[in-house]
Length: 359
Ligand SMILES: NC(=O)c1ccc[n+]([C@@H]2O[C@H](COP(=O)([O-])OP(=O)(O)OC[C@H]3O[C@@H](n4cnc5c(N)ncnc54)[C@H](O)[C@@H]3O)[C@@H](O)[C@H]2O)c1
Ligand SMILES: O=C(O)C(=O)C[C@@H](O)[C@H](O)[C@H](O)COP(=O)(O)O
Ligand SMILES: [Zn+2]
Image (cartoon, rainbow, N blue to C red):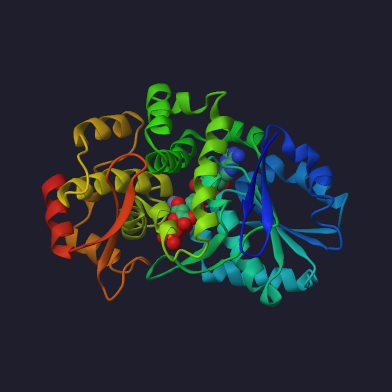
């Protein structure tokens, strides 16, 4: 087992990574949950059939457990699902000492974390991630749901008590979800520097390559990259915005194409490539765009997805991004691996680049 310790404003919490950790939950969570009253286990419906039983029985060795099964998919990051979950928590007599537990991917984690942040004005929660993407979503304390106006528009910064990442659960992950999660790992590599990026490029040319025995070490490395940034700027007043590389376009694609039509990671991958193109245009980078595109496309990412929407639709959506202010688009650019920056980019520039690359 490997552990990355994260220092948040409120507390320090461990991210434990290892194969089979779900069979040791009672032991690893014993101290963390001492003095707590009950667990509210929130399980994604696909994960319910796969990992609920063993998780529940481990948790029940520590405290009484009530289990809520949520529908899988991005649609569950909604006000309606949040409301159902809160009502269930109250009916199940969760009190201020109860602990919410998210078992699933980023959707279960974001929803459960936000529910915990608001229930009785804040209870603790634990993340039990089961997707590759959760190497990003389970760390850093960003929680939230989508509004009709855009992705993650309601949420809270609420760090978990602990993250217990059983890499054994990844064996059942569909290929599309490996691809989705790996996009955030590529993002972390672009942010970290040449060594991590070249390592991934050299070793991964297909989805099968993502399922390498090395994946646990890449997960750890990825979490360390994110940890360094969130420890410096937990509430995104500055450098944390770098973790949004690729998301200005990625979130617009998810929302405008329809949640679930494109995975979060597919949107991010298309957004990463466009961020390099914007960086070149702004004089901030010298990327060989064809070369970067060839690698991303060889992994099956829909780099050309923005061509399915009008430039106006995309730009209007970008103006609702949380990094935007006074309707101006603020973009995360990348000079070279490990050298991100944020800059205001004119909306007409974005429009012209969308037309140049996708029409
Ligand atoms: N909070 C953050 O910092 C942060 C960071 C990145 C992404 N996110 C959010 O995370 C979400 C995406 O997360 P995700 O990609 O994990 O999606 P997800 O939670 O929807 O899981 C993807 C799919 O895989 C299934 N699944 C999960 N684990 C499985 C397993 N072990 N075996 C088989 N099937 C399994 C789920 O049922 C679902 O259908 C997005 O909403 C995104 O905005 C948040
Ligand atoms: O943790 C962060 O900070 C990130 O930006 C990580 C992103 O991968 C993640 O998708 C995040 O939820 C996006 O944040 P948002 O503030 O743009 O909603
Ligand atoms: Zn993301």
